[in-house]
Every structure is written in C-alpha cells, then in structure tokens.
Image (tube, rainbow, N blue to C red; front, side, top):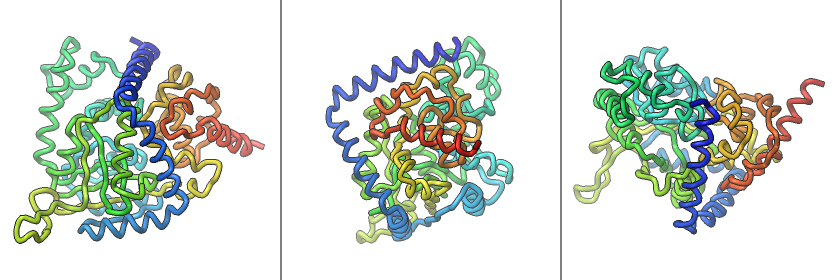
Length: 380
C-alpha cells in the first residue's frame, strides 16, 4: 500500500466519522463558534493572559515559566529533569517543536514516547506524518518490523492486537521506572492555571500521575480565558478529529493534593510532588501582533485541514520538513511562525478545502498567500 492509498483510506474514514459526530452531537459547531471568539479575545491581550495563567499556576503550588524560544525552553526543562532519569512523554507537538526528547537523551536520560503512534515514529527515527495520528503512513507490516526490535516474538505476520500488546508490555516497564512525565496541553485556563488534555490510549493519564514530577510544555496560543473554555477546546478538537467522545479527558491543577483531614488542602498527596508548566513563545507573540498572520494562532490542531488538501494527499509529510511537527496547510502557517520558513507555502494550490473544514473558520488560504508573498519578496 503506497502513501496515496493510505491517505485515501484515512480521508474517507475521517469524513465519515466527523459527519457522524456532528449529526449525533449537534451542539459542537456552536461550541466551536464560541471558542473562536474566546481565543480571539486572548490574542487581543496575550501578555496579560500569560501573566494571569502563570500567577494562577503558582497559586496552586505549581511552577510556571515563559520561554522565549526553543533553546531557552530546553534549558529550563533540562534543569528540572537533570540527568540519569527515566522520562516518559505523551505526544506533544510543542516538545517535538523544540527537540526536547532528543535533548534529554543527549544529556543522559532514558526518554520514551508513550503514545503508540509517536513511539513507532521514535523507533523509526522519523518524524510525524500527521498532527493527531503521527504514524498514519505506516502499514501493519511496517509497525511489526519496528516493534520486532523490542519483542522478538513479533513478525511481519503478527496481528495488530499483538503489536499493540508488545508495545504495552515494553512501556509498562518504563512507566514504573519513570521519574518525570512530560505532557503537552490541549488548552490552558488562565482563570485557574489548569491544563486540559484529551486522549484515548490512557498513556497521558499515567504520564501525568505516576511519575513524581509532571512537566507540561505547551505554546502560549493554548491559553483560553476560563476552565469551561478549555473543556470546550477539548470537545471541539476531538470532534473534528473524528474521535468523539474521547475516552479520557484530563484536567491537572498543580501537584497532587488532598483535603481529607479537616478539609485542609495539602500537597503533595499520592500523585506528583511537583508540577511545572513551561509556556513557549517561539514566534507566537510576534504572530499575535501581526494582523495578517495571527488567525493561524486559533488552530486547535485537529488535523482536519491535512485531509482536505490535495498537496498533502500527494506528498504527505515530505511537504514541510523534519524541522517541524506541523504538516499540511496548518503546518505551512506554523512552520512560518516557529521557524520563519516561508518556502512550504510555495507548494500551496489554494484549493480552499482547508478553510472549508476548519472548525475555527481560519482563512488558511489567505494566510498562506501572505506567507508566500513575504517569501517571494525576500528574493527581490
């Protein structure tokens, strides 16, 4: 099966699932419309919302940081993790954006992805093919070949269930030993300092609870005004990814705590002793002040625009580069914001399919046209 065959299967499946979700949960489009307004509200005064978020994380007993770029973020997190630790990652595009796993491995840590798709990408020493499903370009036989490296019982004839079971066994050992769990955040509530995460596998729940240190690394674009807004972002992201209702929604508000004795809330309890939220700028603040680009920051990373794009269907993950976890039409915008790279925009055919399916109603073709124009101006 070649890439185009795989893409056709995924596109048909996603369209069918999203149509099913919107038919059975008709309140989703209204939530998406309200979420767009709330995210635009944050972008109008992003520095204030960053400060409010960090203040409320500290109130909960956590630690909050603002990193200007990837290098500063790696230094902050490297200092927290130190060396010779076992680190488990949930799938985090921002962690990938700043090269965090590789950095922690180079500084003497045993670091593993725990999302199945991202784990396969790690074994492959490759890069994600899709923002939600990073290993969609791999067939069952490809996955079996990779997993046979850690379990000799897996062959090319193994069933998918056996491949998944082998990975589960391998990762369970890492979970038990883990000193640090690193997650992203699908949304961050400014009014409480809480982070919201959505998943189906259960790995995020373990990564964020079992290790005694939990680090959440995410972009400042993930800040929304309130905790209900954060939950709404979860609902919309999972609905338009075609995975609604999600199996798990996780809300983390500081380190573990208990109020079981005289109703006095004390920390830590059974879960992590320490919680760290590392907010990454890396070009986002400048983008929020750029009227022609800032709509890109509304993206909730559902990945639906990938599947509506003829260029992505033709060339897949090769479109952007290994420098970015963001592919497809949204990747063109995000690669420009985080890497100041305008050139992937030159491949865009402006079919308009991306904006038709975007739940945030981002005018992606217009943003890409502006990026393409800026790239061309550098040549003159």
